[in-house]
Image (cartoon, rainbow, N blue to C red; front, side):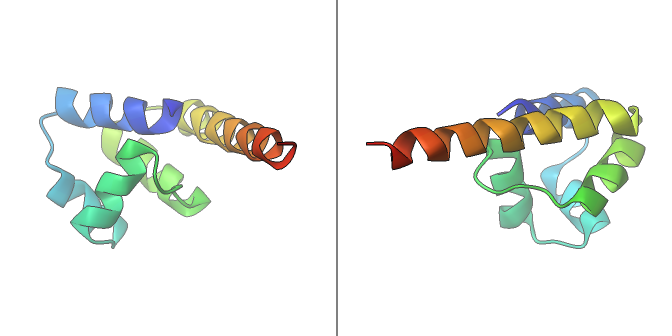
Amino acid sequence: MLFGDKIKELRENRRLLQRQMAMSLGINVPMYSRIERGERRAKREQVIILSQILDVETEDLRCLWLADKVVSVIHEESDFGR
């Protein structure tokens, strides 16, 4: 859960609330919380918005987002083989 951990760390460093992040993304707080916990994937458009809010390079966040997607696919594949 590289992406969720990173956005949580960046959000906390900037002293932003989950409520503020959710509002900026146009989603509710529980949904945003699930993104940080890795229980839900952010959409590509949301990654761009998050990079702007958190003042980080879009490509850096996008790489973490994609890495989480790869890990998820690998996990699903390993579960399928059982």
